[in-house]
Image (cartoon, rainbow, N blue to C red; front, side, top):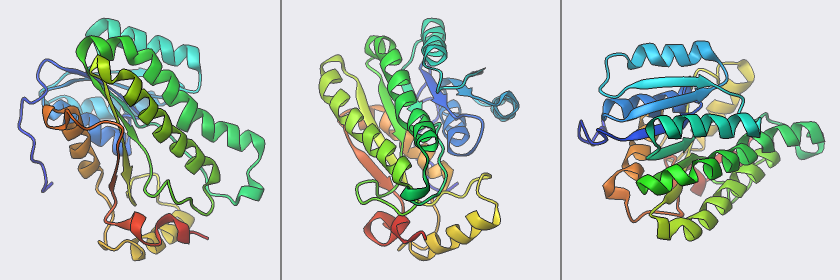
Amino acid sequence: MQGKVLQPGLFAGMSGLVTGAGSGIGRAIALRLLELGMDVAGVGRRVELLEDTAAQAASLAGGFSFESCDLRDADAAEAVVARIGERQGIDLLVNNAGGQFYAPATEISRKGWDAVIAINLSAIFTMTKAAYPFLKARRGSVVNISLSGIDRGSKGLAHSIAARAGVLGMARSMALEWAADGIRLNCIGPGLVTTEGLETPTAKKMLSKLLAATPAGRATDPAEVAELTAFLASEAGRLMTGQLIQIDGAAHLGAGLHMID
């Protein structure tokens, strides 16, 4: 990929935890951190996907380990963080795991609302809070993978936008509280990212509309999100905290997710 600008060995001796590391953006982030020398623990629900990531990581500079966990289970999530932190420390936590479905607000059931809030907001609070002592020990950082244009709302995503906006507010609050500990927290808002999970006819129709509404005229590559994540974790990003960084080809300035019907 053009745009790889960080130097090999940048993260040698450092350790990261990446959720949703079995596919898509999470896998791209894990592999890039490994390429830069970081030891990465991947967490996800599907073991077979994490095994695929491990196979791709075999020749990279950093070491990859993984654990299966449903992050909506707070006790299990806290235990995973504790095991990883006690085993190898945590310099970087990447909260990438998430999910949603498209529906008008009037058609979102309370069960559906709770499920989206649980994985996109509550689980991130659990993981971040549990990682605090390990991040403090290393003066580490947190990167939350969010969405483009969460400040403007979106048709069909009331639950997900509410959760992601909540994460941004939480990250900014923690950035204030934890700055004295040397911990930084930021959010990345990718635009349209084409991953293996967006191949249904409905998704393809939506993607074509979103591409047409993106001023840059193309999707965001997962590798671009990975490079930005690594930058934020590096010394070059040491003064950046409490930010939402949009990597979306200016989609958040135009129609963006607002145009979904």
